Length: 573
Image 1 (cartoon, rainbow, N blue to C red):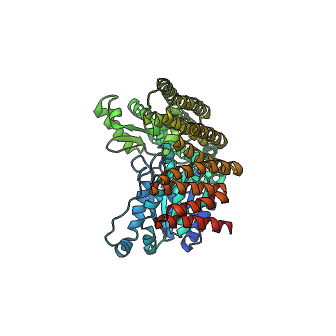
Image 2 (image 1 turned 60 degrees about the horizontal axis):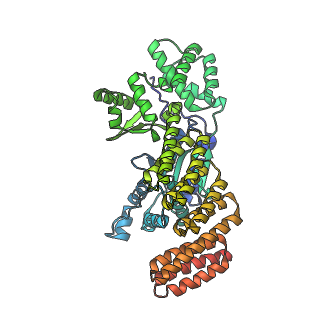
Image 3 (image 1 turned 90 degrees about the vertical axis):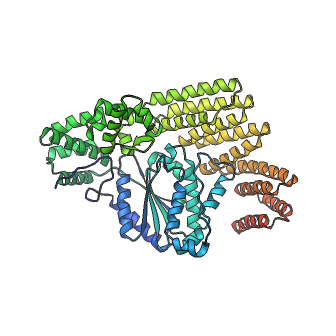
């Protein structure tokens, strides 16, 4: 029986082709995971858009289920982005219900904190404490290996929650230490791989997909032919093979377009028909999967012109007749092009976004960024306070330009943001200056220029310190130290870490002098960590003695610093 095919959904087993090396690597990973010999908790599939990441992930879920793995499938979306880790924790908790009953009694479930766009002082430690609360008890009763399969993991960055990557790294590191049978299998666009891995490559098993070989593309064409019942002669097969460039998504797009045209015209596929289909696809790729109308095109263009390809439903309805707009949306939902909830419309698949990528209005994004910068500059000049939303919009605009492969425009935003950061400091708008420096640095980081980012952080920290604003300088120095360490400039990383540690220690001294032991403990702890990063044994020893004297009547705090000091001793041995 002839079947319909889709170019926006992962392929089923009957169309899955090639990837024998990747499948073998994943099977080995599963074997090690089941025996407890795999230390890495994150398996990543990466590659360019359309290369087949989602289809391979779907195949991996089938393999895992066959191997007796508990499989959980998730997707990152605007509705679940903040509660992703709590969903993970709840799911794991649900797989070991007797653990809660036996070990925890009536104790309530402790939720993992929602993901935030920025991590403030102590937020990472608090997140990990909440996430791992009672997880050791759950671990005792978790009888099978559990794997979370998650597609489109780059959406965290798209939605402005790149902090989720740091949280994931910390969670994975802790899971590895605990030998917890919980693993993540993720798909991520190659453009976001570096942001995901950060400075912890040892936590990841990365498989990067290459284009299909000519042999695999020809085999896939044969499978399409068998599935759809259309006849493809050798000349057309060669034309399809060359036009696809080894990218399976392109081939799927061509096959969908060919199938639509043969059904409409009643003619057999031919090279001439394919060239006509290809011309339509080049004009607008959606011609391969839908009969485009003015109404459909208007709605789709409205969606892709917005950040993250999402738009409130009421904005769609405002552009014409409400009934007509709703009918068009229903058609697009039925064709698998968009998804709709109570308030929002968005593109269903990342593949569709790639089809429409050229339709995204880069000029509009760039224009918005320039307008924002002018407004920010004007407000700084008149010493007006800036709402946080201005910085979020500016950061989002820069990220979208980077994702659209417009690094020169993103660099222009970074350069202007840096200029305004210095201006804000001169006007004593320290919070605004701090935010603008962070935006500047985040752009350089996304573009891979960590050295420039580190230098900006170090310079800004020095200026804030000179103004007596140690809250900002310590944060910037800590970030700079991480960047220099990631670059392998160890002497610089140690020097900057030592500067940050001195500030943390001074603030700790002040709180201790006022009798605020809890706050003193927080800042001494931070100082201790940074001295460790700097490798300053003398200052570590002095700080340990200071903490011992300061917390004589706080045995819990004493134990904490004893553990830190023990960690240093073990490292020395």
